[in-house]
Image (cartoon, rainbow over all chains, first blue to last red; front, side):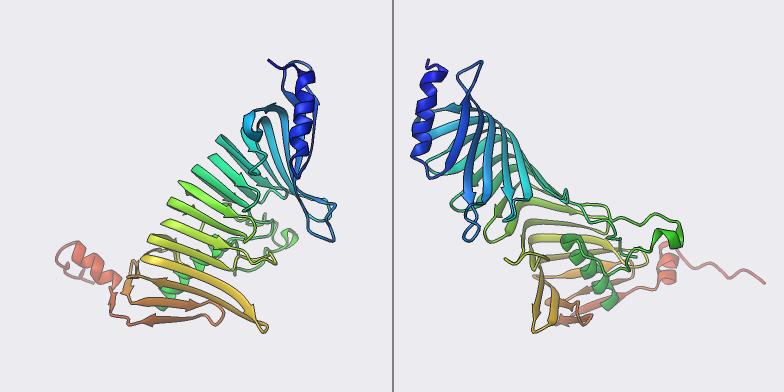
Length: 153
Length: 190
């Protein structure tokens, strides 16, 4: 078993091979890494310094083949002004750093920042390159309407 | 038939697009009544795909749309938002489309078709908003039933076109009730 001090350079090396900005801290109580963060995508110019999609995990566990198991997962998207647009929550997922893909057999909940849109389902794949989110089972979407939106008489 | 289709199509568009042609909520001060906030719309399906670049969503398998104004069942539901954002510009319901709604008087309306398409676009400052039912479309209410090759409702002009309309049945409510109850009774002596 690798200890946290051995893992840290491996993570840095792994992440250095990725075209993403990622950070994490060695965990205090296990070989997992705490507070994993990876900027999956930035906005195009002229907002190229603004993060568009940020992947976060409470803990990260490095696997072979460039895979990273994350727990306590958040995927957040931001507008060009840095305002939050969407947040996705999952108890766990696998981040394929080479294929730039996030997937899980578990639950996923996506909610817009304004609370008008909620999406949940079980089993998902989020491909960064094709920008495709696939929910495999029991998909449930809720669209809420703005105050003042009335029912048709 | 026209009123039936209008009510049905209106409910379809409203439910899936979150829009309303109803009047704006009256100020609370004027009525002392709370505004009628529209309940949320829910969509259930076996699976779904969201293309974050093209801003489109595909719901697949046992799709159910539950809305305060209608229910829609189909096998595939595709919706897309233009790249510029804003209003949904296309909704397509396919395979075993079943729509249950109500007209303005609250009478139930039931419609089936193989395909229902809603499109919205603005060209040259002119709004085009169309709903088309194809594939053996059938519309039925308590009083009227109708079929045709294609039922097209232009929401902007509020006009309905039914291609090759080949059946309309109108039932008189009173005679229907009388027939169901058996032979007509003798009138009461005055």
